[in-house]
Length: 152
Image 1 (cartoon, rainbow, N blue to C red):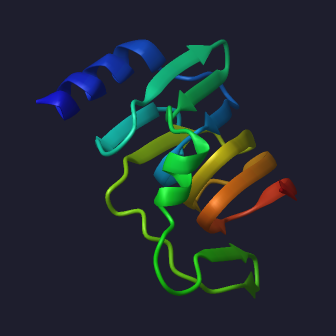
Image 2 (tube, helix red, strand yellow):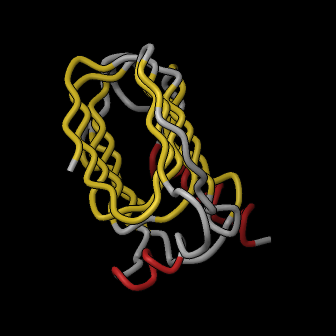
């Protein structure tokens, strides 16, 4: 029931973005899929955290509401906990984010992406503009293409 309510709220709140949409995600742990289109944001499943969503002009913002300890707890366990793929360069690891929310974001090609203070698994099927990643803990990132990439 909560999933349906959240999805209906997002449809009303986010609406249909304009051409390129900036995406900002912070204090979040979970999985994110970015596809090309103009449908906005959809929550596929709820998990830990108190997600807050907003849209201001052409910026979609998601705040996962998790502090650094909560974000760090998501990545506990044996083995490597990071993975990055961009073009032909790959690293391997293992994220453990199955108990956390999954977001699907549909935006126009060239949209900017900013991730701050988050442990994430991201699959970006859409080509992105400026991409800034401040990931903490575990991460698994697969990007189709980006005009610029900064990782902290």
